Length: 457
Image (cartoon, rainbow, N blue to C red; front, side):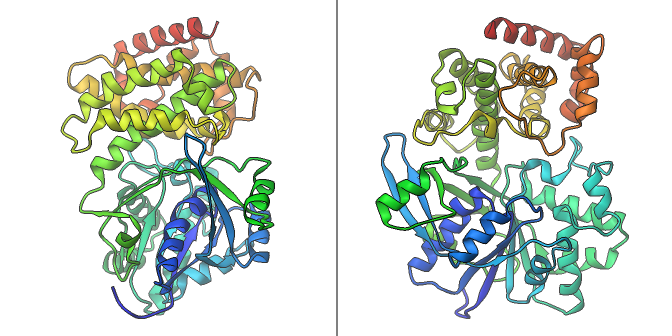
């Protein structure tokens, strides 16, 4: 590590997760006496400026409450965010910060749907936001990063690292390939050459359950700490960050604060995406259909727990059998975390973005089962749950607003209005890729959808 001071870690996507996760790690580094790095943060979308305003008034400081499954609460005032970047239509404050030579890492949390990738890992160029950016806009991570890289190239700025902090399999590689495809479509070949010579995109795995803050969180923080916080965050106690040690230039001493810097993230991300993320969504969809509001009460429902446990035990662990991680223990830890009643994580939050999660987190396990000659009975329950969940959405019977960054509402309504909605669902290549070519996959989904109807009656 260099001894020079004044490095900037720019984070795009100033949401609850970033403030409970990456900002927590950087805060710990500062608290240990290493003040070389600070965070500047802002958003692509104009949907959280009240948080930016509140944090600006608090000089970037806020309180993080963590709570264990046993109810132990810890309060820490986070001090790593030194600069808040206000949103404006051209995103100039964000772009200018990214273009500074002092900015050595640009990290981003934009959720799975924010990468606009289909099952072949190619850009969904028909998406309206992506189409806008292909004409020079800045509504997507690709458009914003392009506008940051261009002045860095012109000004011969120092190399940098582009770090994905989302639950996307092989996320650094996927982002890199999406960005290069985007640049090629815009015929920005000089930027592609600069990117190859001056930037890296490490893979990373992030983990910490971070719900929307409870309504009584500010009052609880005031009582426990005396701090009147207008932008607090809460999360579970558990935290993990595994990063491929492939930074292009200087980086923080992340090992000193518990980050696992590794040669390959693949074993960790496969375990986390298939065991934690997929079962999390499974529990949220099932819990919603069975009249539950929170993840913990859904997980503690025997029938729902059995679906998630069987999915992991029968289909995931055999597929990841050569993994160096103790997978049965990891499964048990994950499901125990989901039972934490103090987090009050909602099914609504976890159920979101199903149209991105199925191809990224669920379809690969079904494909792997078929490849080894096994019918994915346990895994097929997950898309079946999502089908019935979306059927309830179609009928206007969900108890909350479903949020999905790539939802094509007209197409989904048309599917459920068709004579055979299951046939259309089973043949959706964006969700299931090559599985749509299998006649027995349609049969399997029909069987599991009927099982879901029987379960929720």
